[in-house]
Amino acid sequence: MANNIISADDYIAQIRKNSSVILDTRSEAEYEHAHIPGSVNLPLLNNEERVVVGTLYKQEGREAAIEKGFEIVKPKAQSILEKALQMAPQKELMLYCWRGGMRSNLMSSFLEINGFHTNILEGGYKAFRNWVIGINATPRNVLVLGGGTGSGKTVVLKQLRTLGEQVLDLEELASHRGSAFGALGLPPQPSNEQFENLIAMQWSSFNDEKPVWIENESRSVGSCILPENIYSLIRNSKLIAIDIGLERRKQHIIKEYGCYPSEQLIAMARKIEKRMGPQHLKSSIEYFQQGDINNCLDLVLAYYDKMYVHGNAKRAPDSIHVIDLTSTSWSEMGSEILKQLQKQKLIQA
Image 1 (cartoon, one colour):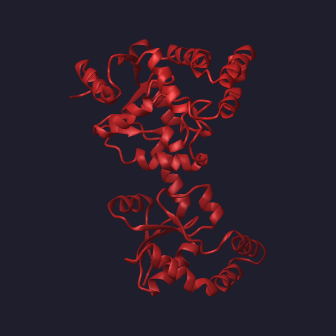
Image 2: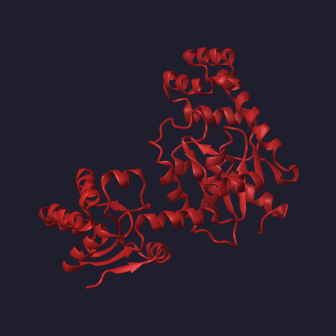
Image 3: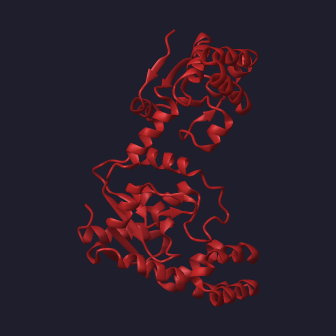
């Protein structure tokens, strides 16, 4: 049976259409660095074997490399088949390798002989990356959710999503809350390449006729750098700045970070020493050591609020719309924002 090779656009469309298992046939290291979101790794050649075949390709050419590849894979064939059956008992699979070449074609041929139906990504992961770059450069109508540190923007974004709004939660995708303290309690961040992949899968799924909500972020979220188009949209779109009051912000931050040992909080505070100043950092450390997070927050928030005001000063004044939520319950913030924006005719009812 001939291998079914499909374009990146058709490949992504099929992923969205059904629940076929996506197999990444590249090595473990390639997969761990970045992959198509939702795919699972079933290497045809592991890290060491890939080096052997690649070296042979450079030294003796393609035929010698293919022969060596078959020699390595043959003893593993039964194990690969058993793993594929565990992953996809319905025998429906999407496959890809680096460039849609030897590894995915060999895997596809072997599996189809054993009753599987497979689709291969034309051009492989490299073609997917080209698709990602193009998608992330696509302009969209964006509403930026802003507010001082501790305003509960992530909570609001989740509410907006529940209410049917389109939301790109960059901090969720980056596994980081954006501030110097943002890595606490979260899994390791993805590589920047994988971050872009995750964005593209969501960005491509949005309806062009509806706005996309994005939190007001700097160019980087932890170690992850925003695609240029996304960052530009954040800086130049309408900013919906929520105000919940300083005391509620402090309460929210204490609830989120107060459970962490003072040593961890101090280590995070040291990251912003240059901008806070040595005296303020020293005072912050003393407060953390005393367990006095409330007074420490006065110093830390003074730093972050200064940054926030500075960032907003670079925006067109008429692009900033403040929403007063000081008397709104946490559970009603998302719906109140939509209500006020509809009243101001900034969004459609």
